[in-house]
Length: 251
Image (tube, rainbow, N blue to C red; front, side, top):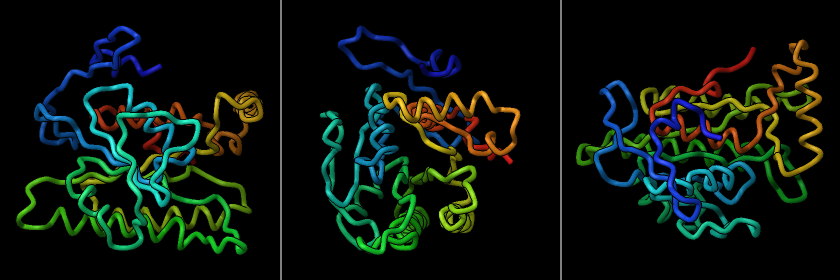
């Protein structure tokens, strides 16, 4: 369920209809700009585990114009979201995707790998850092262009903590965060989930329950088990100007 503070902004329609979010004008200090038009949101890696969860949640509202950019340009086989425009593109290379980024209010980066695989030639640089840096640099150039009055915001799905064997994974996330702080200090948000679970899978539910039972352990607190549904719901809170517990790292 969506948090109570956000629920006060939503008129619940019949189940056959989408939810309608009231458009609220925020003070200038807020990053959100709603001027009566649809907010344009682009999820990069929208056909992945976290990205598809984002789009599933965002699709419940009719205030968003949604795009997904991925290398395949196709949704996950289990995802049916007709109101999402699925685009094929490699954000590490120049392409048509840059025009979509230019008109977006928010770009959500869900691209990345857990572990590199030499057989498939994946690496943290190629599959996590480089795509994010390309997005950040593109948004930065577009935001500072004299003929572009709008500012695109960037949301990065980082990680709260990882076991010792995932140190390179965490290091890659931190590299992206440094670029965000340097080029998009006023137009970016980082969220810090830990181990992302799926409530529909028994294994991850068991792991999550185990972690809750061991909350007295600092180690398990730092692992921060979070379902992808919660990540998506917290993202909606951020996009609508609310605060989110995921923007704070658990030490």
